[in-house]
Length: 314
Image 1 (tube, one colour):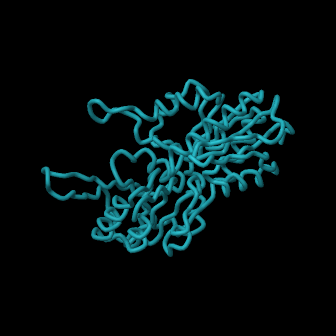
Image 2 (tube, one colour):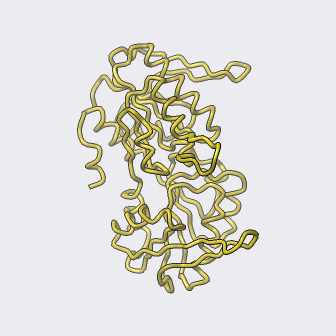
């Protein structure tokens, strides 16, 4: 690793930042990111960054607005301290679900947040499994969208008999993501088709594909309330699936999601540490966390050395 690389961590996911630093054999830079009494954010970079290649490691996860402001203020501090290049490493990009206008008089918040990050002085963005690929185009700076699929494929091969596995997309919109994973492990693909025939009626789930006797793996980018996953698991088991697992990149898991999943028929939910796992997640019997530290560390190393990042996924 080049001597002029610095890693600066915000408060969103210190554990992941340390894992990235360990992978690269680069200690985290000394920096203070704290609050005044009125919760105003104060940042002080406590070592020289002039002419350095600096990577800010910060997910914009809950509390989303606090962590976003930390990212913007850290970037401004680095820019004013004459850093040569600032890369925002955003394992989970908050506001990514607001990538289009779903109805009249609504914002495209993902674009607004992209503009804020760019204007704060960031030169490049590294993120993992954007909710919608076109968000890369919201940034007017180079943006690398890394994929967790190789990590998931490796974990599935280590823990399961893949000869009986079927990959399942929990909705029609996630087919491309599910197909990419299915291709990596040479498994067939099934789709959960959700529809509500009439207003006020409960949602009906139709399964496209024969899942009888199969070990089914639901694949998605974000799990929030967990309702869709639990309902999809019930529908798959009703159609004769042997077991149902879920591999999800970003474990938002808000509200009572962990309790809902813990009491569901899901055999196991596997998430990454793109969002810092809560204590409830750590003690849940059927939730397991795999780390994207090595993936992000390798991407940071290649970015610093100006070598290919996309070849990581060939």
